[in-house]
Length: 123
Image (cartoon, rainbow, N blue to C red; front, side, top):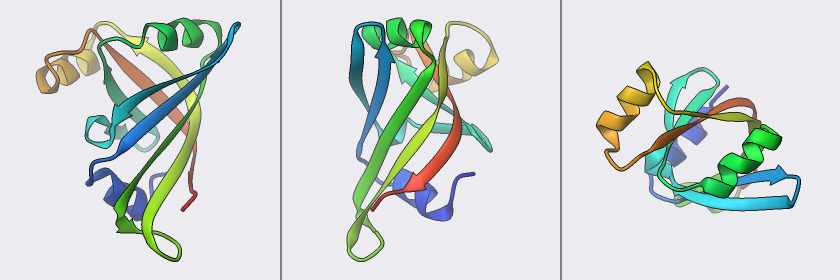
C-alpha cells in the first residue's frame, strides 16, 4: 500500500493535515511526519494529545483524509513530494498499540489509528 516514495517522505519532517467531517462540518488538525507510525500494510498510528474536535468528528463519521509531504524529496517534476491518504479512523485509549506508542511519545493521551484505503502521490 505504501510506496517507497511515501516512505522516503516520512523520513523528512513536514506537516501532516488530518481532515475530518462531523455534523457541524469539516475540521483540520495537524501533526508531524515524524509522528506517523506504520504498523502494517495499511494502518498508521499517530499520537494524540488534544484533537478533541477531531475525536468528536470521528465518533460521528470515521472517514478521514490526510495530506503530508516534504520539500526535501523529489516529486513528479521538481523537488517536493506530497501525498493524499484516505481511510477510516478511531482513537485508541488502551491496548498493545497504545502502550507501544506511549513509550515513544510520552505526551499522548490517545492514539489516532487510521486504516488507509488509498495513498496517492499528489506532487
